[in-house]
Image 1 (cartoon, rainbow, N blue to C red):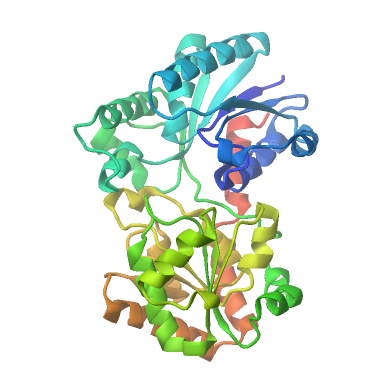
Image 2 (cartoon, rainbow, N blue to C red):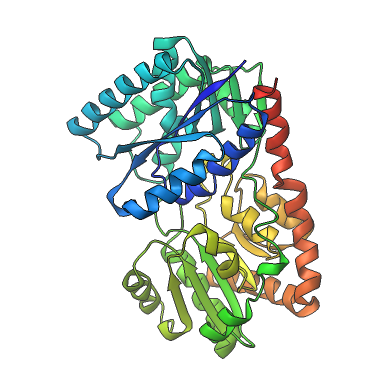
Length: 406
């Protein structure tokens, strides 16, 4: 019997969180759903991720291979227009669920879970939360919201409702089970743990030190630090550039910084000037996800500058798995998911416990020891085995097979 699925997200289709954190799992779901089943994917399109007409045809052709239908709605910032937009989205999806006989509502994160929860109430369909982690408290800890704000109280209330409604929970960490009990008074019969998995075939040794890119960037004989992501919000900003400055001072002319980001180069240049980093040693690129492995693979080590706030114990940085799959040691802040402990346990990088010059120097020195004591190939296999153990898609395969298999 066919099992049609509605997948809800709060992201734009071209956002990395859809490309790296959603679509790979939908392809796995497709493998285990009964033949003829369709996956309907909801994305909320921001203007900066606009899809051109020629792109759209290719995207839809690629999705069709996996029986995925794209449902794209415009994004509006918080306010009355946004509320009306979501009423329209829920209305459209309500009729889609009935007309297409959709049996499952599969929400990625509790933010998109708001629409999924309401639709499951209205239709009685099976409700599931994937990538389950706190967002309301995280926004307070980040300083984005106040605990007394309407946004916090609404999302926190909805997280409680979603947690108690969901038949299946797929979390990034085991610790989320205890958090949900303490914060939401929610217990689960069907609880799974799935960190951010990585396509180990896409990220591998073949992507390391691409000769043409090495020549293009002038990275011959250099020590390259890569960061893939944003600054501010849930990520460090001033502090990580202070770390880059310490690395720059330690390695001198050998040091290079590669930033793969949606920030404009001018924004990065301002940050570099603030800590006296010569911007000629910095490359800023925004590249498609298909290009990320080759660009990330130019580096000798990566950084994961997630703010070490309490709720980040329950998150799962996608970039860590990508770094590890490429054999890159990392500098990571303390208490991030299980990853900080993994880095220490397997000695595949350095954990940043404080935001001081002496701590940054210790982090840099630990990375330097790894680079000095291992060849690129030796370090690749040392780090890669961690990705194979903790980030393989086989973890997701088992979970989706159990939920959606015949």
